[in-house]
Amino acid sequence: MLIAIPAECVANETRVAATPETVKKLVAMGHSVVVQKGAGLASAVPDSAFADAGASVAETRAATYANANIVLKVRPPLDEEIAEIKDGAALIAQLAPYQNASFPALAAKKVSAFAMELLPRTTRAQSMDVLSSQNNIAGYKSVLLANQYYPRFMPMLMTAAGTVKPARVLILGVGVAGLQAIATAKRLGAVVEAFDVRPATREQVESLGAKFVEVPMTDEEKAASDGVYAKEMSDDYKRRQGELVAKHAKAADIVITTALIPGKKAPILLSADVVAGMKPGAVIVDLASEAGGNCEATRPGEVHVTDGRVTIVGTYNLPGLMAGDASALYAKNLLTFLSLMLSKDGFSINLEDDLLEATLVTHAGEVRFGQPSVVSAPQSAASTQA
Image (cartoon, rainbow, N blue to C red; front, side):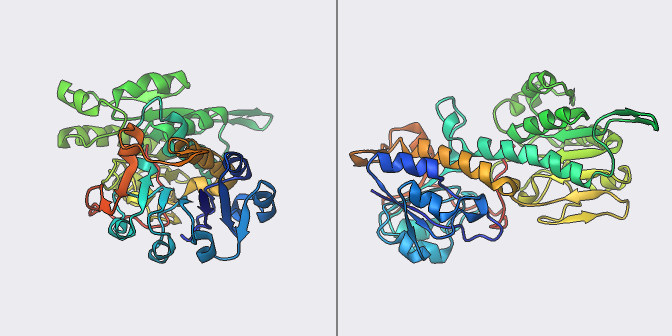
């Protein structure tokens, strides 16, 4: 089989879907790999490293796609890329399924497209879970970004000139990104609090040394919040949540928000009034900016300072700011997923495999996934499922 690794076309995407390590393994299995020239440069992987691993290097995107049976990508292909993909090929990438309107075009070319964001959160799928691997990086980087813009020290310091109080950090949303943000902020010496609508996350938060901020729930609300993903809550719960979050946000020096609901606009956790009441010099890092933001005052893709001197970081694609490790982890995720279908004997899709069935969005000329959501997100945005 010929496996293609094109350069990403979306602006500001620095990651690549393969590394020399994964290329070596694919070649050892008897397959051929073609990498577009310059595809790995932003991830600190030169063309020569891919060539040394056994890949061929194509000068153009069209030459990369030509005759490829399998295409590995980070982002959804643009319309012009879809036109270059071979009919009947397989495509594995983060396809933004809830916002993607290109599935009919992929189906028309009989492309078997797999959206890695739809992978079930099961034990068997852990080694393939791109959301976890990339959000882990996003959570870590969010604290470093906050530290960059915060005008004070993170840890407590006792010096001859006096004592510096530790920063108070509030994490909103305790998924993979939130947990890594908690761990990183604690390592830097901050006092950390965390909030999530799922009571089951309390133990994880406290195990990392942070304080869990909890909104009292009814039995019905507890049932609605049970599970891996955050879900839409009642209006009354949102009111109580807003009051509690506002109280803790106004006392915080740094707030990191990570809350997402799959297929929907990100919930607003910080209103403009709450931001206006925060301390001068406080920093908000909004990891949900790609889906509209958890902060009402977020400007997606931008960093800005409010009139009250609060810095709001709406930067996209935090994993892409650490492209070397982000690409390495992502490439391993794809290689493991690909191993479900690829062997020395060839390539086959077992529709009875729950992981393949859940992620296969187009196949045999048909769109298998539902119609795109009305919620839209910029193509340059990264998936940051909390």
